[in-house]
Amino acid sequence: MVRESERCEEDRRSVTRGIEPGASTQQSELTDAGRICGANRRATGVSLPADRNNCPSVGRINFAAVSQCCILTGPETGGSSVRLILLRACLVILAGLFSGLTVEVHAQACVSGGACNPSSLNKVLYVDGVTYSLQSAIAAANSSGNTTVIVPSNQTVSTGLTLTGTGVALTCQNHATLTAGGPGFWMVNLSGATESVENCGFSPGGHSGAHAILIEGATNPNIEGNTISGFKSGNGSIYLVGTSNAIVRNNRITAGTGGPDGIFGEKNTIDTTVDGNYVDESLGAPAAHAIGFHSTVASQSVSGTKVVNNTILAGNNFCFEIGPFGGLTPGRVVVGNNTCRLTKNGGSGGYSVCVSGSSITGNTFDANGFTAMIAAYEIATSSNTSVVGNSATIGQAWASVATAAVAINQSTGISFTGNTINGWGGGNALAVAGWGVAVTTGGVANTLVSNNIISGNVLVFPKGHASGGIFQQCQTSGSVCSNNSYSGNVLIGDGTPNSLGFRLENDTGTMQNTLISGNSITGTNYGVYVWNATVVGTHIYYNLFNTTSSNIIDNGTGTTKTP
Image (tube, rainbow, N blue to C red; front, side, top):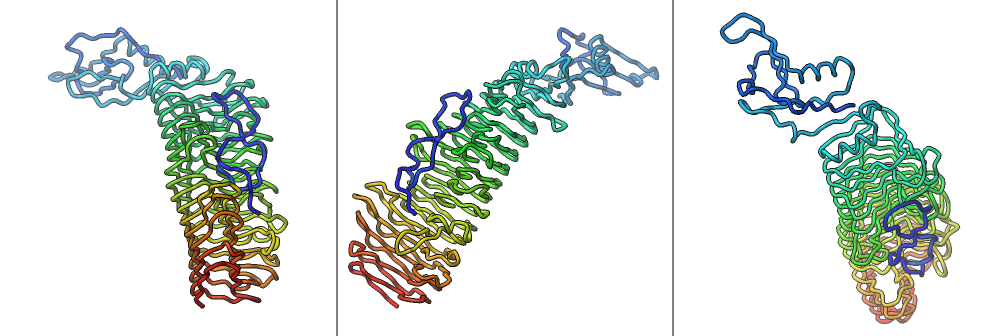
């Protein structure tokens, strides 16, 4: 089946909403055609006479909080007595240490003869509930910058935590979990530079309107090693807006019932790396992606997105989707070595990209016995992009739906090579059917579907179904579907009647100069079917056929054939 409404042009996302800046709408329904797509105690005011600025090196202990605090133990030069000098500030710090208070101590490497300057060193604040609450620690960290707030135990977050200072880090220990104390706010908001949230658990605490992590207008943020579970609102469990060079790595995200996207970025969120996450969207809202990036707004983009090494369980929408949806087409996108698995029937499918100058490499898709309505791999309104070494395992799971495993819609300069597709939708290849690969205009007028290369792929037909291998269709006025090449592919059928290797069909538009060369087409009812006279100048050369009926049926114009 070929979908006919526009894809990647506008954002129709429709997830349970909460408080988010510049909220975009989410796709509310599936469309049916090609898509456009501890305490810190700092002693202050303590000074030493000049002759004590440089303490002897015998038994020296140096405290970062008081640059001139020295404890000297051992003989003085030229004598045998033991000398101990303790300043008042030193006594304060020692008292703090021995009474169990949290003290900020930094190892320092001081230049010989010079005083140490602790202001340039990273500071640490412990949330102990006495000296610092979580909120006060974050406030202090924002004020000082370059400060790590350590959370050693579970905390209730009653109001949002906003990180604004440069180099502020929120780090949890002992599997500490942050639980929302109410609805209607983001638990953590990053909006500064080089900030991070690491190793924390996040829970909505029974508040359906609670949101997890917002990254808005930040640069170089890092979200790593967190566990985020059960959220039911917001634009994403991790939501990025207008952010650059973010790293979202090794997090475990599980959507609550009717919950939002696992990870969602938009509106000039550029050069994001999403790496090694586990995202379970099986309970998410109908339109919620596991991972999604939309440009959303005119003149804005989500270019440079890199999504690699993630394990994804899809709900009703894609495992991963990226595209303009009202903004600019993303470029420099890398989608690699991800695993996508379906968990329910009737969802969108696996991976959907509307990109330019990008690569989709080494990913896997597993239908897991469930149906999908769009594709395992959808490449829509894309250009100059390589799709290499991916796989789809579908088998007979899609026999009841006429869905293609791979849909290349309204795209030019796509190199689809070295992929393995096992199974796709059922039907009748001489009427309506699922296809291994469909290269079409997607029902959109004035579309360019040209200069695509489909080569070196292995397509194994679903057993017992009269579906087709590769379908090229021009179906809209003003569209051009020419100069596409299909070579070195291996198509393996099981002899089911009406099964077909290739079908070339031009309903409206221009289709010419298609090359079908060096393919192996075995176990199908028919080999190559040139559907009608408006398919012009097809070249069918040196293919290996083992069909149960005709190798070539030619109703085209100016077709050239070599056995």
